[in-house]
Length: 241
Image (cartoon, rainbow, N blue to C red; front, side, top):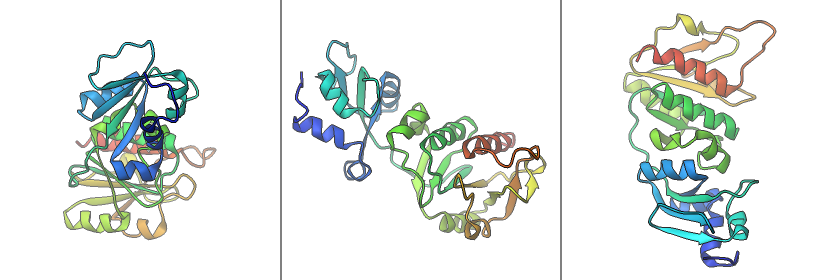
């Protein structure tokens, strides 16, 4: 059992909460038994860190003390198990696409990823300013579904132009204009752009899109949380799949 927080292995695990180190190693942490199991089922689980006294069914595991687990984990309550997972490899864009123009809140990002998987989106494009999908809060919020969708980092504006060349219709969400989402007949090759929590989709990005869409609401509600709004849009999109 590993008991010292100064152990080199422990130091390496703890660094996997750092974005730069994650990119260097192509590894990140999944905290809790459910996420460890999801990583295992998808073939992404490299090793498991297990609290002393807890049984482990996985082959490559290390038993650690509570002090060590506290050093590794970002959770307030010490988890029984933490996994080291390999980052999924992004591949070419396919199917319906969701482009995120600066979504910064981890909870929103997690909700968006779960909704994208639920409603048949094949690829998510993370634009500049978006929170990392390997942020510990994002990983937990996805409930493991980040392993089930193609996610790439790219320039949103460049990607819009490339998708249009490939025959995609691009739609930008817009609070104060566009077509009621209930009236839109989505293209078979659709790309939806949603924006930052406070600023929405940047004007320079929105100007490149083929159509604008909005979600009708009562006047007393100025706007929706981006996670909620995206979920509604993707549900409508799923009706055409």
